[in-house]
Length: 191
Image 1 (tube, rainbow, N blue to C red):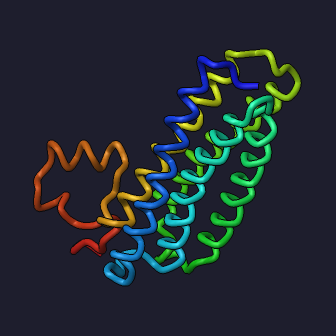
Image 2 (tube, helix red, strand yellow; image 1 turned 60 degrees about the horizontal axis):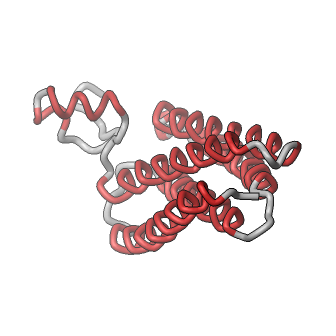
């Protein structure tokens, strides 16, 4: 059961995620077929990851707003669904020919999603066991915020084909603009 101090948090997360889901659909329709930097399966995995991240935050928050409900159940169930999604996405990515796999960015995305969904399962189960632990609600709130941030990063990659990772961003800020202006995983002159 969500106490009133967390009610506003879940309202904000649900509103933000619903808005981001709508923007993701617009972005996907505008950018469809525009870039061929990544194989289609990679773009589909990233789009599905963004949608899942937003839907995760939306669903858990909405269930958390239902009076008398225990947000631990949807948190754990959607967490398991997320881990199964990551496993399927990585299986598909690894089945690509080696030169098309783009393993590092996909691995970073997969690890981020696994951390979010793993923590969500742990906190969900803890809340199922003891529904009066308000600190766990805060932890689930942080996990949902992390889910939104992952979704935003993947959406940005889809629209602009930019690498949104920390090192790529720092390189872009302090490096040579001609070296960092290439899209994610674009072939270099060295290859």
